[in-house]
Amino acid sequence: MDRRVPVLVTGGAGYIGSHAVLALKDAGFAVAVVDNLTTGFRWAIPDDVPFYEGDVADGGLIDRIVAEQGIGGIMHFAGSIIVPESVEKPLDYYLNNTVKSRSLIESAVRNGVKHFIFSSTAAVYGIPEQVPVDEDSAKVPINPYGTSKLMTELMLRDVAAAHPINYGCLRYFNVAGADPQARTGQSTAGATHLIKVAVEAAIGQRAGVAVYGTDYPTPDGTGVRDYIHVSDLAGAHVLALRHLIDNPETSLTLNCGYNRGFSVLEVLDAVERVAGVALQRTMSPRRAGDPPALVSENRRIVETFGWQPRYGNLDTIVGHALAWERKLASRRAAAEPALA
Image (cartoon, rainbow, N blue to C red; front, side):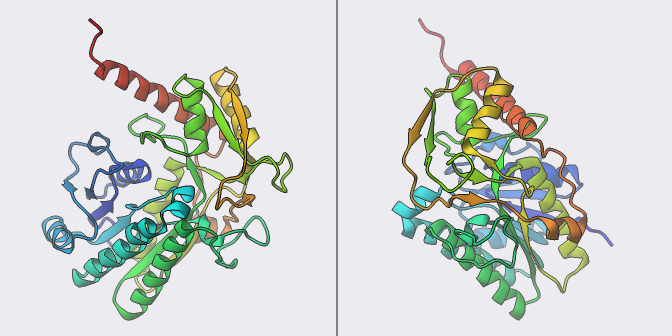
């Protein structure tokens, strides 16, 4: 059986999507990308990957891509991902993450696409009753970001029951790091991911790091998260796609994390350790929509297809993020006009 159907990656010019493109190419898949470049970068897509600039809700565009590229699977990363922003702008999140996903799913069904992998989130769990949290835990999101993603999961469940399509919902915990070969990384200006912010501060791109919440019921009072290396996450997508191809009657819902949590202060300590600098830390109030702790129970993904993370060490994650941040800084410096 040929397990390498052509794949359309939505949001493939963004952080996680660009890593998935590399992982798919490295695994021998034909890949095409659609991205509206709102937060993505055209340079993040390899030159030999067909690129379409546009919106995933443009059904005519999706029809054309599927026809031109012979698409058999979709990996859907396009969407909005900032939790506090979702609290401030809920309608934007329901449009970008739910309404447009519905349109894309409809396009997949209309065009006979058989496999659909969805970029979901641990935010669907809200504040879990116990940590680590497994896939069967209650889904009670506490912010519109989590709710908008959960609604798309439910749509996929119902569509797969009615049409010849299977799906994988991969619930990410905190994604961090960068491609070990420094081919791509988190490049969005103003990104809110902790490790991204901290390594920016470590190389002088920010004055310091704000610690949001010091009174959580955690060992040091700061939020605890399960940080997963973006390349390990991308590898999990390839494994999930192969599983869907080999098992067309089954679908997947899987946590993507390491079953290990680190507090904000532990992460900042790691950045200082790897970068060899001291960070200016500002203790700030909690942000709306942030749970105290969110750590993955990852037994299901390990047992389903033998997923073995390669970059699970926190210092390794930080080191790759730091190397990418330095490369970005060099790129910016080279692009700036010389002073007269």
